[in-house]
Length: 101
Ligand SMILES: [Zn+2]
Image (cartoon, rainbow, N blue to C red; front, side):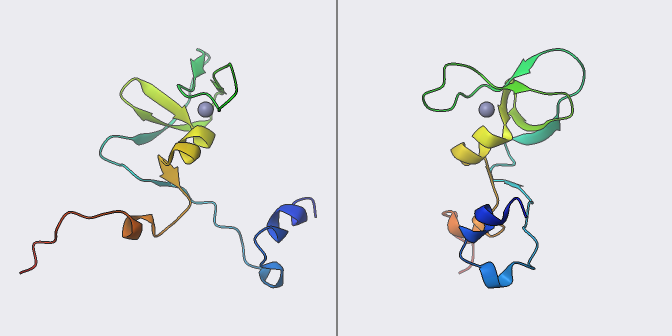
């Protein structure tokens, strides 16, 4: 198993049968949307990793997120919190006061 070392980090070795949830959630659907890179024109992620001096090339077929002209690869989107793997993320963010009286 090539990825056993990675799954051990989650200290759930007894639940190794549980499939990894690879779903991603946009945290701000008002401004950001998911898109797929198509075609041969070069597109680059607008964000650099800390310490890196280059922008990430987005490949044909790659899923990324965009807001207007700004496009961000999924790695950077995860790092910046634009997308999350936390299915319950919406429970953690501050809400506007509920209209309940
Ligand atoms: Zn990036």
